[in-house]
Length: 560
Image (cartoon, rainbow, N blue to C red; front, side):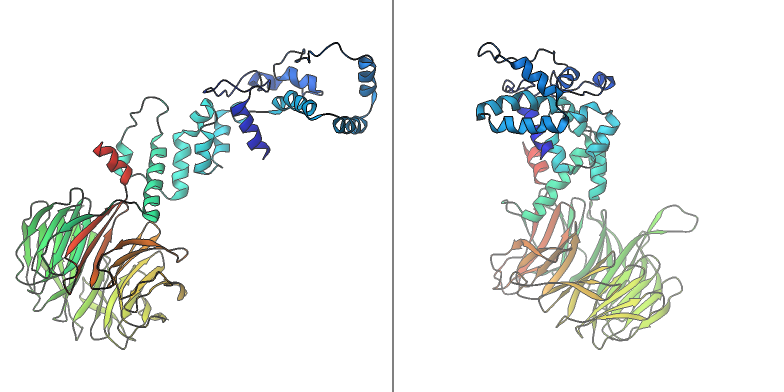
């Protein structure tokens, strides 16, 4: 409170108690200590303090008339008293003063106890003190005076604030110079403000309508990928379409499959698709060229997973490898750059429905109720994870834990090295159709319309994302984003949840036909954009992509 009153008075008044002229704020002046005054002796009386603060010994006088008789005798008597006696006398004196007289005393005394302690400190110590302020407080402190503003704009100070928030600049931000001439923002402060704006836009939304991308006629969009400014949608109309996330235009249609496209993967501009025509195709999304057609499966390619961090022996170049699973019960490992099938993994006795690949191990789940862990180099099945009593529809694998979701309503957590079942997670009432695993936190979406958050180390259910704002139909897709969880549903909505608290934040998307046939099939998100594939199975909603941009301020400036 004292600090606040001091700072407010610094903004509004000078050392003599009178307001500064409008539009002027002084950081230093006659009412403040200068660095040179620090070497003087410690003041013992108020008069000494005034001298230390740079004031003359002759303070402002009251010009109402000559001094009262006996004043000097009274002052000598006061000086002869001890400290406690002086305090008692002052208390009695103040009680007998009128309000205007007390105000006069305050105007004389208050300015002398105001200290711009930040300006008195060496810059390094001043910055250290400011590191204890929250970013919002730093912004307010910058309005105090010119010197405080210079300190509050310090680039290393804002770098520390970004580090505390877990924020790092993108490559574009890191290379963008600050061009504003006066009081320009530090690069790290610009990063912090931009990331704060994006976070606020995610959580609170914006009145702008999403960009609508129409295509695939009335067919179902079965898979969706998003990389940089390119969006790729696959459909049961046998095609994939490449869209610009900036303009919303369909850049090209990838034709070649003779059956519906059921799965896809993407890295930068390379797209791999799997189809009911039993093939995989490798595409260049920028040119639209089909680079390779991968033959080998004898039935529908139902799932795939791409990994690009594996290095060939003796060659320092990344090798893209994709593992595909098929209704023919096999998995195949492909070199994307050459189109060659490197390995075939056999062992399932029913269709392979889901697959994960971390570059070292392959994990697959099938309609034979089994989960298998493979060494793709030797084509050996290391573990067969048995326990589910119905089809396995979803998998997550982080190199340590294997997590499988099944039509038997349970989720099982397995040790990838030993093959042992660590936990059986119960609570869902139907098929677990999708899961996301990150930093030992698992989020599962279920046909029972709920989303649950689990700790895979303990098996504890941390949150059930439900309540009055829960989904009204089966959850179709999930994704982590910025400490948040996005979930889409057959009820035609995309909901945003706080991962830490489990609280519903808002409906990011709500189709006009929600509740009467409108469906959000797939979602994909980056830090700044959300892409949704939506439509219906009864004609109430046309097939389309919705693109929401949460980096709104930057786009507005670009337009202007």
